[in-house]
Image (tube, rainbow, N blue to C red; front, top):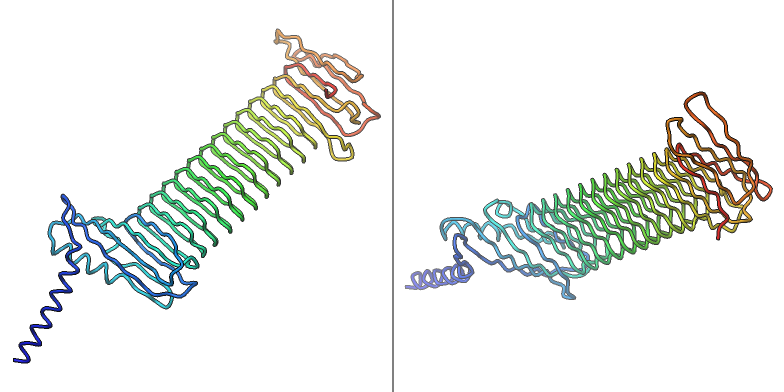
Length: 416
């Protein structure tokens, strides 16, 4: 009788446990949906590790010494028994190893199962996450974040540790971090704002925005536009063909685009820009400036250092505003066919050489016009070209100003 009673109690316990487990299963259309809820006691400084997850993940923080996980699992399978087995396998994939929480196993990487994780953990935790394709959102984690998804979007806020994120093609949005950021996507847009550290961004073709960075910024995109605002370190940008817009950079800046426009305002260091054919518009550069375009127009204003401009055929306008003439203020401007309009301070010492090389086939008649006294000559170079030259020292002579165009006017003016 005792054996029967004990067996009855055991059966009741098993049934109760099984019932409590299966009541989370619901059939919704063609899918079976189940929930798994886990809580682990942890110390500070641990990590959450997730591997080969199929689905979305949302992580936030609290002040408790616990990791709480709620997984909602959607299964594209035929029967309740199959759903139960998948849930059992998932439960076996939750582990605690030391102070680390691990979620992994065969039940998480099957294409016919998709999960949504809501996870709350201590602020001091780190995250090491790899998903096959879901979205990822992490808020408030103060440890290191190393996260990747096969193609979903990534959103991070208020991160305290070194951050490395990648996605096969989704967008990346990172806001407020206190350490360095590396972000890579196969083709999505990337926005990184308020970073106390360096920023490295690479995308196969999306647009990039970086704002308020305290260290160097490096951006590479296969063809999207790039916008940079308020950086305290050096900036290096490469895009296959998009536009580049930079505002308020404290360090040196290098910008290259396969054919887009480049628009720059306020660079405290040196500036170098190259475009395959777009326009270049620059204002307020404190250091040396070097720009090259395959054929676009160049407009430079508020320049306080040496200038080197090369364009395949556009007009060039340069305004130099430096007041310390002891710094390097050499100027070299060459265009294949546009006008050159140069304004310099009236008292700047310089040696000027200007040249217009005009084809005999040209119907246009060009000239060199200068506010400074220069010797102007005209000579023939064989039967193909006529050359107009102007030379002279101003304010006793100094750094060389070398201007040349293949078919435009040259204007040399006193800064007004």
